[in-house]
Image (cartoon, rainbow, N blue to C red):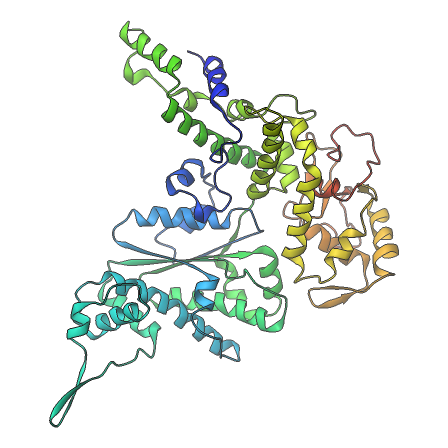
Length: 517
């Protein structure tokens, strides 16, 4: 049976209303087996997953996959009985108690205590019978928070203080969780504690107190990973937050070496999409077994044409392009489906998934449950664009309080601009009419506003000499709009495709590959 025959049968089994089709948008809520099935490995993930690296921090925009990477690492390490995995969020650490520290040094220490407290609680859950003072302290720490049933030994072997005529029990408070954890780890060197911290910047605002709080966290995890034996810290940070706090705290120079950037190319977007669909088709195959395909395989084995060891699952034989064509029709003009999704999502897998779900819902209402057509995507570009504008403003409002007004200035304007046209438009319609602050500074330069819009993916650069969909993000060309002598390298500027319909932009060219539709 060849791939085409098998593909035809798969199409009959696909249901675009099936919530399992693209997986869970929140990786931390995804079934670990399903996450592993569609997770796409990248070379730069090596140090992040390595036991030999004490500290590694992933930096990326929202929706790019930071949480998925942390969840993946947590699942891998939980398979090793010698590893203790503690998954935390910023809310878990911040919610322990109010912040009373007033300077960077005190905040660094405070973060370390919070992190070690969380680790000690988990160790206290697993110790079982505890006889040493440190072990008893760890058990008690866990018990006091109600994370485990009262340990019998902990209740009987309380530290005692003798007094004349009576015995009075006395629990000694843990004054330094860092020292407690360090002593325990030194005695139990075979146990590695993996601490995974996500969303430490979830409520970040570009204010001095928040900047100091966020920057001191990353200094704290660097020191913790260096000082405590057997600790492996993995954390995430949004690109825009890091760029803000990096300017306010020179101590982060020492943290920069532990950071790597997560982004997806067009080719990798194709892999991500294909892996998600492949995981779904595998589930269908396991549930339905596609009786015709199974029957044909069994017949060939019975007559000796093939042996069981010769059989390769047809899903595994299908290329990424074949997999994608199972779900998306071939009527995408001027490009492949993954190229459109990459451009419309700005390279963010979560946005791409949301767009596919919206398009699938349109098809379902029309009675089409087997594929996602180009026309369905066109129909949802306006509501999808409103979601993306809302995401963009919430993501970058801490950098530019006026970002809503700046973006709306482009409504009902053009899609594309030369550099001179773009700067003239910003100067005439934004800077002359209102005050704009970026990263805490009042801005009077159109070039600075344009660079900010490029940094936050509202603007994209177009290279007319590139084939396909020649649109580039800030991560692809970070030096653009940074110098007045050569601000564009011969490129023009366009509003990112995700926002065009929501802003009612007009197409000023006859280019066939224009995504304003």
